[in-house]
Length: 412
Image: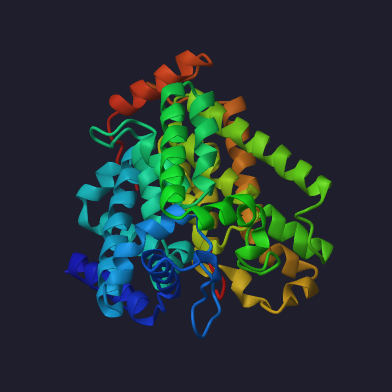
């Protein structure tokens, strides 16, 4: 009876999310796909009623072509099913990587996990807007876990990067953890997809890669509350645009190096899920635009914080992070029309809370990898760098340890 009630609650949350959602981003995807199919200037099209443009690379518009052919309702149903299937598989992959897959065999914990995942704001907004972040995150996790069948490892990361640029941060991660061949395949796949799109849409590709890719304002308002990135935080603090300044670029470069360093250190210590989470979150921090629905890397981060290889204080940190993601208090503050520039005091803390939590997470992982408390039976504490690190992670992926059951208005 309890399991049936839990299942009913999960289904109710799901129905509410899908019923109330606008799927506004799906509409923009279909706009881009239609522009490609009808040979219209891709980046001159805007969605009627909202003025939202298509902001992704041309390769993404090619992929969205089939959705543009379908009637609106059919496209929403098909895309909704894809998102739910990808979310379920992403959750399964994350729990398995965290060595928490034993929970999936027990109905009540499984229902609690499903409910918790659906309540998180990044997941809620992805389903409501019809966003593409869930499938892209799944592609990256499958590739990192080497669960991509006969495809060359690294290929899915390259494809994801051709759809949306932020996944490209995993190429240096692969390179620095000894998976050099995977990094090369990822770079080649990205280049192949982007070149293929350029062959069929040369003018759009030229315009994107020479102008729009370098202009974050094309994506949306950088100071907007939903932009939880270093650029968003610094812009709100400064009261004006900072993304073109040298000091901002130095700050972002420093954070990128530090975050990747933490991620690589975790990967070299045979704690890949912590490494992947740190890498993904670093990418969110340094990207000029990281809307709250981009923050799906918090899902593996929370799993890593409660798994058997968790850092000291990981469960408490996971509880705090989960509470933050469910409540998402930044939306309680005045936003839009540059009202974010008027935030002060505690409003600045609440309004930049995703970024603050991300920095705390990276610091926690950094302390963990520098001063490890390796659980008994785990053998990653003396893993060497370079090629040995890559072999260690590959071995961990191929032979995982036994499961340990335990308890907006803008588009990118």
